[in-house]
Length: 143
Image 1: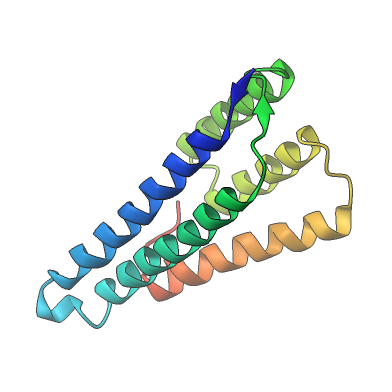
Image 2: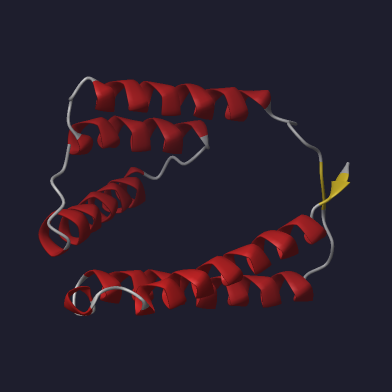
């Protein structure tokens, strides 16, 4: 068994640092990008730093937990297999939206979620937000 609290604290601190670095790097973007790309990068950096700081403080308050590494090999190998299948579907130009739906469903089922209403709402929310942010807002073509 391994004490997981130091690792959680280190990871949260790393993401606070990474968020700050992202935010600061956006300040150096060219003037023409300050009203478009830099706004998004600043938003992501600030959000990452704030949420990671909250996670850091919550981790400090909770009791130390012990975790056994790789206790459930089905989850580990199942998730790796699902990610490989997802990447293959994306490389075969099936399309991001079409490949993502079965990936999310299979991942949710593997992890034990069975409430189809919540799963469907989550899938729609993930796909809709991805479409709006990347395709509409950032104008990045979807695969």
